[in-house]
Amino acid sequence: MLFPSIHKTLGELSDLLSRLSREDYTSSCFGLSGATIGEHTRHIIEMFQCLQNQYGSDIVNYDLRKRDYTIQTDTASAQNAIAEVLQQLDKPNKNLELQQTIEGEMISLTTNYYRELAYNLEHCIHHQALIKVALLQLGTVEVDDHFGVARSTIEYRKQCAQ
Image: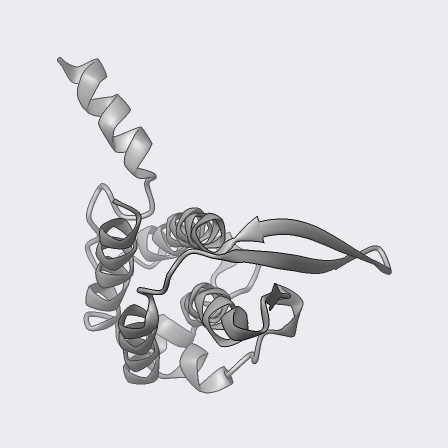
């Protein structure tokens, strides 16, 4: 279920990007502390790219993201990057070392590929929720009620409605 969920979530983001104007994508949003939809989109994509690019080394460090500003300023570049992420997604699960610098100290944690994919999926949904805030503020593009909402929350809401 992990891979289909990632495909669905990133697919929703790609579909949204096809409906945004360049101005909507690159304009600062007060509700996002001045950030843009493009910046949040780039961040989502680069977390997945980072995991994929470092998979072969058995060490993942999200601090070493590329920060490709073309992705945050051009929706077509972002859509192409999403398509590449989805094409490279299906890899065998294996143990990885997660490295991160926290307040100047490097820490290492044992993790695995599927766990990091699950993290990236939840991280993606969180940033999609922020993108939704910007879209509601702009009022130029209609956004689905489920965009930026965790699958577990959607299921919970369905149960409550019954």
